[in-house]
Length: 86
Image (cartoon, rainbow, N blue to C red; front, side, top):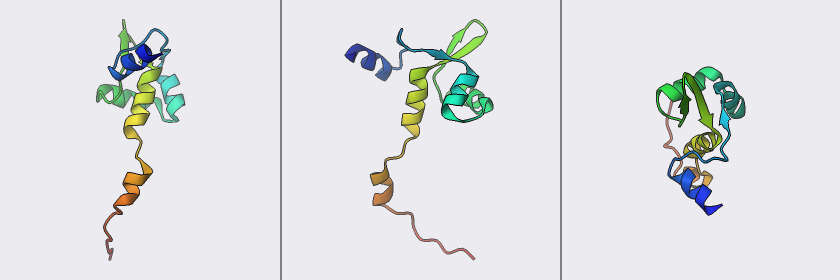
């Protein structure tokens, strides 16, 4: 199990990783398939090209979510500055 975690940390696809289509990845993240396509074009999410097909490893979805997760404590430790509108 440790080897699988090390491979994921190194950005490698492991044999136990299921490859998802753009639609499956979009369903898993509850976003549109177009958002997944933009992430692929902008290289914000890791993907695998198999011929003309593009597949996203399940671990890449987990990494994408982890990268965008904001820790509650760090966000609350320094509140945003007060701004007056108007």
